[in-house]
Length: 299
Image (cartoon, rainbow, N blue to C red; front, side):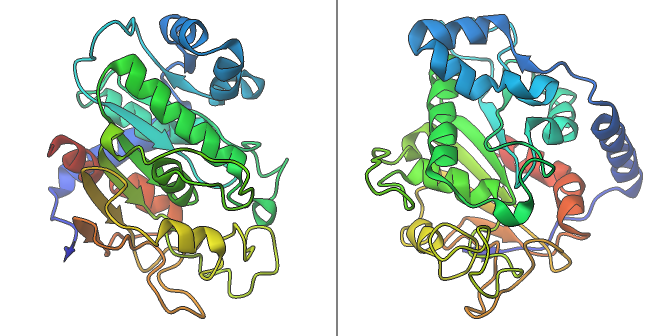
């Protein structure tokens, strides 16, 4: 694994890019929900239930997006990027990231998001959110469907809690919280580039003891949980190229944990980790969009 600091940026370009990203975060300029062609593809090739589970129309405009005018009969012009949100978030929380991609070479056909869980802290407080088998199954199905629709491998950006959830989706095997559910084999061959951004890959520093659902010893962010042991027991399964971006000022995942003393966002044997991203947990996501796009474009 190679560790590397964030590359220097032109300050004027960075200010401009961050200004645009903040505007997108506030305004959510791109349309939401799956396109008609993507909707029809899912229903025709899978089921109405699969569409309902992935589209999350119960959440309105923030539930999902992706598809564009692509018909699913051939490959898209470039690999699709799947954006995986964090705890108590929804696909809409990635509108800023999504629109930055849409203005830098990606299109409605190649940027995708769905929502796992309730999608709201008002409905499910963060302390009650663990890494449930249902969430893993949903993200696994989404990877399969998007890869099938775009007829090629996908790229994935997993943010915060979304990183360990989607890593388990890729890894497969039995669900940790329900061993009767066999997810199937790894989806490694379906993923080209995997990027963890402020990912809770080994723990959250807030989970010193396993005393809430979020910090469960089974499927929570306590460093010794069965879930985290499971996804970190194997290496190099997330995709062909694996990266992790994180920073010491992260106020939700944190930099290291007790009692394991490991770096919370580290992925063992990744291609590179960028460990000096600046700002708090949310700022790490928005402030490293240039780096994320560079890594996606590198392969």
